[in-house]
Image (cartoon, rainbow, N blue to C red; front, side, top):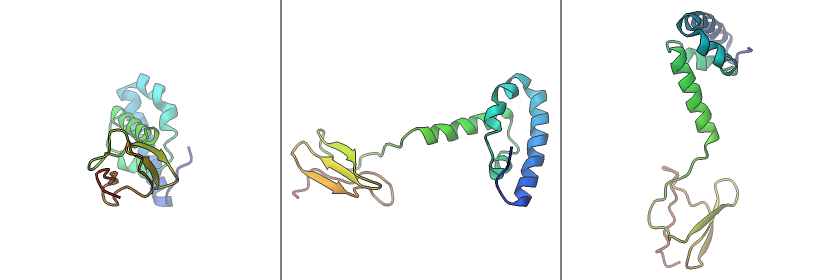
Length: 126
């Protein structure tokens, strides 16, 4: 595995990996064999340094959460009153096209900068 990071980080992470894999082999050899390919995909030295004191099961859980976060599209929460019949479709990065049940259509950035929530309110007269 080729680690990514500064030379000091890579040296420290290599030491952590060697020590942890020896401990994990004694802890749960079957699990280590099962997830070794997933562990070998973690090329960030910072990842190994940040998780240096975790058990094998805890590291696998961290990896699973990272992968779930990458795989699951984020669905923004709606703020305010959006018409129940409103539909949304992407219109480019950071832009949305919203058509309400009343026929009003808006294309543009409609997310709060601070929360990321949709801030479109169908009750507005325009």
